[in-house]
Length: 140
Image: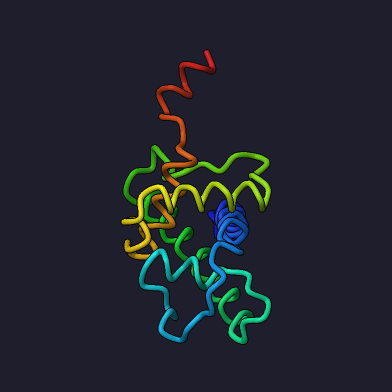
């Protein structure tokens, strides 16, 4: 798939940024994640949680799938602009975790948003792409 490199980068970034964000035990009701808070719980890093392996695996698949859908939709509908552009190199695990945690907690309503909305809102607000006209002017 042509979006695979960006999706894998975003999945790694998001999995890293969400890990350890929530230490509460994961419950079966959080599969699939309905809210951003559920997604954070699934992506947590509680090593003593008996559902940890399933939760982290689900988290990574969920994040990668959401990113693939977002990038695919943008490619079909507005070919002129990606929904977000990850920096190269991406932030470290600790930096990404701190950024996402701060972003999510800055407005507690974000925790109640659908999981996909929270994830993609974070990515688009944190990693906006330059507008094509701006990129063109900079090249001249």
